[in-house]
Image (cartoon, rainbow, N blue to C red; front, side, top):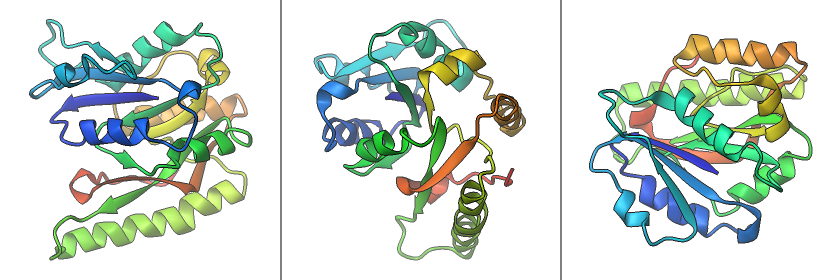
Length: 219
């Protein structure tokens, strides 16, 4: 499990706790955190945690190196690791259920690359009209576009906030390029040209605040 953290990382500690208490055997997975120009870096929190591996790439860079380079670093570092079947990449702004990894393990028997469903949470009880529109639109996309495409055997645009990819697929495709939506589209097409579909799995959920909503155009 690779967590990418950049900027303000309010949810990081909570996400790590959730990943450490999964109903999945602890000897079957490892947690890596990539800290990329975090505000008030939380590295010290995990210094004595033997279950967490922290990679701080905040060296002399003025700007964050970004997900592309961060994920490439970890993929190269773990590329030859024994007994590694797949990578789970997740942004630190998300949180997960206790059966998150168990569900991922199940769907890895059927898919090589896939994404969970994002469930946006509004912490404010008085939801604004615009937030309501965003929630409604995204649920429409999830239910009627992404799910339908997957059931029809069609690919979906990869969402780099959270996705799962088998190691052999990643090794064959090569380095990441996730600078923007266009590069995400190009990566999706690159996978498709190799006959690899990016599936959308509605049975696996991640959660994030509605403030983290980003508009996504269906592939």
